[in-house]
Image 1: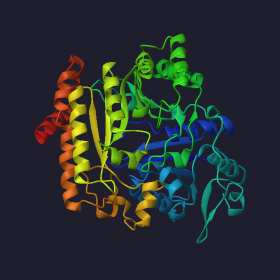
Image 2: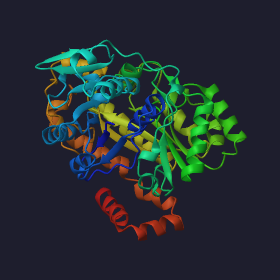
Image 3: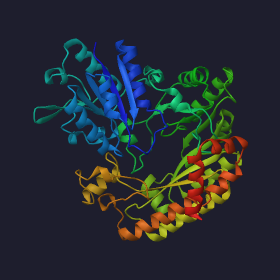
Image 4: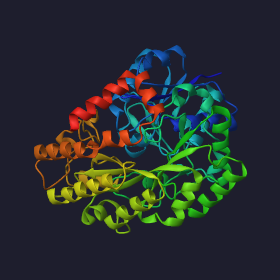
Length: 476
């Protein structure tokens, strides 16, 4: 029997409290349709190589995101040099840049990986090898044949999506992921986890690769969704769930059905939720449903306070007025918001950024339950923005991925700077000042929700107490 090790590697010191659901789905799919369960999952940023080797793997599969890709490359090289394992790599970065597959990777999985990995494992279990002649009939891969990269035909997406079983959470140290944390980003320490109820998004924001990777949304049925919620409550005593869909509200009718089935199974009131919304779809009826479901926090990609830049980034179907109105409606029903903004788009001026700063101030003043997050507009492979940056020669495919970051406080080299109106050094100062603005009311928000449970948590965790003090001193 072959040993498969699936790896989610992250940089030491960053931490990773979110379950890597993608690996869980791969494992559960193999269990169900191949009756294969000799699978281990390594999810760590420390002693990763040591833990992989300890499993004596025949095949090692890595998930690779653009952020952190440099570290994954190094780890793949180490595994290749110290084991005889076949190295697989999948995830967004490989899917978007398959022709840049590393020489330390034997096979790249392009797009949705469950059925592709099943077919690869089927061949390996039958023949003990993965030779070029055996790989060519398998859709959705790129592989090295000596010095040449070969591509197979594209892989069709799995339909219906309910064919994919719930992720194999039993392969994870669930107590690590379920330890009380602020999974809802609202200062409550709850046993929480993440789940997905769909794949894909109907919109085509120029900075996002989701629609190009997943296409139109495929939605799990309400029965599937509520069964997973029930499983999480009954098996793991889950109190909070972050729904990690790219757009949870793509179907209001489905949400109605989810709420009805939650009520039938007596789940209402047992779980608090954070969900992702889009401002132009938010209305009173929808928010009433979310409130009944148990949503206490909503994430919104507001992006900009300038209509000109907002439409450049997200299209003409959303406005700054929609952004403002969505936050107001959510707040009216007692739901806090996690509003995401970005600065540095190619046509953006200092005046546009000031409009964004004004909107941030307005949202933070609306309700202490609102939080604003800032990133730098950065071209991700597979996005329209990436193609723009390549055509304008702002960026090459051989950039130093070690320097890649969306954070305004991390050194963003000019490799990833694509704004055409602001000097780079001046932009870095503007970004730092805007970041400070988003955090300026953090202590006020914390104090507004100061509960004895939160006080006790601070005394139990000196690092948390020091972080609160450090942030306050830094931004006041």
